[in-house]
Image (tube, rainbow, N blue to C red):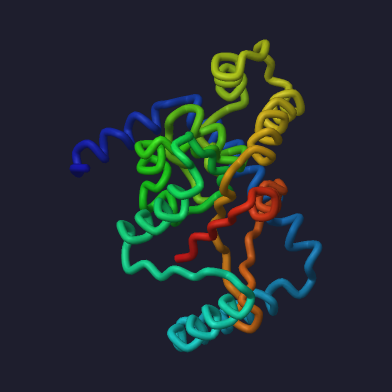
Length: 239
């Protein structure tokens, strides 16, 4: 993207009242939620400092921790693949998926994964006749709109509830409503069927635990637990 087109997009976004309202509302919710969360953890500063120190130590000794993490996973019966780049990662995922298909279209129930966005995984899988369904609500919404996430934590931060209502009316066939419980219940009903019928569950990894080989997936919707436990195969993509 050239500098001129980038600047033009900035101007258009600033002049977009719907977008500005959505971002303002989202920012206010985030700040209020963050303040409330910190109030519930009196020693959050100490905890954050400890986490920062742990992270720095791991980065300093990454090869050592990675080998330990992989060895523990293998002890646990987990198959570990190492990919040197995006192309190799995609090829490995396709090799896992293809034997499952038996010449039929397979379904992947996907939890949020920023690494998969970076390597354009969904687009490539769909070209290979593999159905990919994002199960994080925000990711599901932007997927229905054929867009990429607009924010690492809040993928649909750029949308107002009226736009989501129109989207669900158009794509899911429900009467137009801006009632948020109705909208979320509609998505929940559809995604429940996805969880139960998926051939593969796919997730990112927030962090791995070298001592146990475990992976930590942080979610506030429960979809992470569903994709990692219900489908017969779980693929975890770790950066």
